[in-house]
Image (cartoon, rainbow, N blue to C red):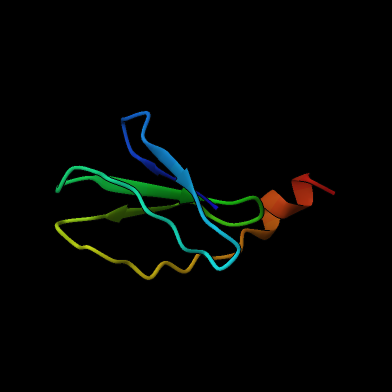
Length: 65
């Protein structure tokens, strides 16, 4: 997945296990996206770690086949 700070050029990608590190502002909103899954917007609100689970988007996946 790709993780970015909404409204900025700050971006990261996850490793094989889904881990990532990103320096963002304390009130940042992260946008997480991956092909075949619905984008998620997650407010950071001072958190230092997050557990994110994306939901499948079968409509988006069908576009790729």
